[in-house]
Image (cartoon, rainbow, N blue to C red; front, side):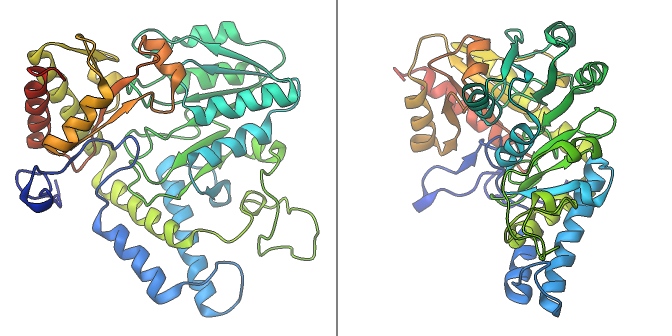
Length: 405
């Protein structure tokens, strides 16, 4: 495993010699980033810093090559059908809105699940109110797991789209996207997959899971900077999807209407090329390190943490029991009814352990596991975390468990 940019047993030194800084919020944004991500972004800003596709001079061409290489990395990672099937956006929320609002029509029926992030639920509720679409939410079990047969039972002749997450951002449960993809194909429905929690950790094959749109974000396990993401789109979906934004693309400028060419149809306006440069470097890091290696390391940290918390007692653990059924995201509750927001504050203030409390932008998931409205304390582990950090966090929880919290 490559050297990790941490000091003191894997934890970053604290400010002023205080508690070390231990970051366990990788489900929100991975931290730290590989050095080559920063180097790629610096190279763009210092040596290029021009818009791709907006000129024939060398700096614009250099910027275009950066974007082209990034598309190639995304295509390799997801086995995308073509370079032009990869469109870049500012994050996965934007990508999901492009897909949902681009494909769903007034009066359509949409099937989704009860562990979705608000980036899926809110666009659906908006379209339900504004355009009269019908939404069926398929219930997952108390561990956050989904039975594909329940999706099949929810399908109707008028079902146009199935949209679902690959893994819950609350309990880390990995959902059976390939099986659901086959159900969607049986009914001729479009299939949209949110890979925010799995891209860069699990091996995802666009064709094998039967996706029509695969939405991804750059700033989590793909190791890229915030403000990056995108989607891979099938030719079938691309023809039906209306662009969310219309504007300049640097192509077919004689037209006053949006071009149909891919990916230009979905990429209006000046791109975040500096971010895309960093994203390409992040994906290259993931590919060169190996998805299996990354996944096993992160899951081993999650197993170690779960085992440690069980030994402490006084805490509830949510999500699947089997390590292979989850990514490295663990939600914790208090059996004593402790204020979890205060517990998160004390973990940071007294021990330098950074985690996220609350509903994690996923109220449906918390209703599903029975933690609404108080939420949970979420620990999400990344490739650069260490066993020493996990052990330290468990000791911090044990120490706080002996207080009033």
